[in-house]
Length: 140
Image (cartoon, rainbow, N blue to C red; front, side):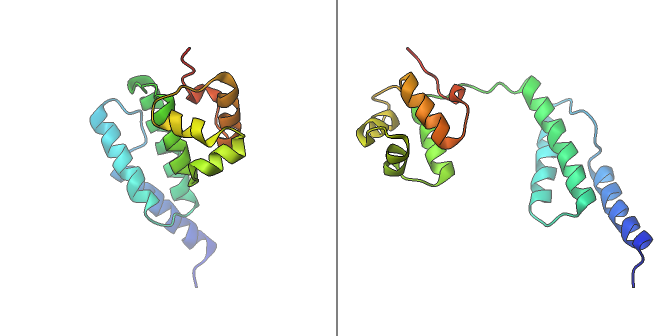
């Protein structure tokens, strides 16, 4: 039977092994970023204990910090953003139209790139998808 001290040491050993594999320090290059993302992917593929989740949280923060400074996020068109949100939520155009009280033909026209969203539609879609309205371009 394992004692509490033995269990804790096992968890600490896992944590230290992760730190030895990929030290927790600021990322300074795209190569280090790629390695950090690979490490995150490997961790997400298995169940984690508390110390491993802590390591993952800190490593994720380091990746986010690097990307916020070095990676430019290009604005996406209403068409691309709406398509992404629909896929991410796993709904159909008809579901979005009904949930937002926007004509299904309007949703279809936006998805085809034939139409832009107005402020009212953006507000309804943002509420429906639980995202800030700023994810849409609102080109006028």
